[in-house]
Image (spheres, rainbow, N blue to C red):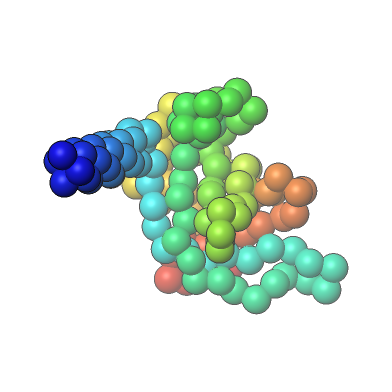
Length: 135
């Protein structure tokens, strides 16, 4: 009887793990977004920081509100999200003119000429270069 209880417990545990994995696979792509490796810099007291070659996730405020279950992001604005280590992220509200509507895609990001500029949640100024040639 003990062996059967262990088997049921192990099977139930495996089912839960599979369901959790499927949940994350499904919901990680639920909200439209566009990812691209870019060169990013932020303003310091001494001038621009060193350049970081990093993956940037672009989302509209509408998409970001849905993904975070909040209403704190401006619906039609475009945001650049840079994920750092251990759950830290910079959420940068971009000031460029975008023609994204409610969903981001590659075309609405790459059609902007020049660097992308904006400020993060701490008020720090950022510039993001999405091309090979940065200004």
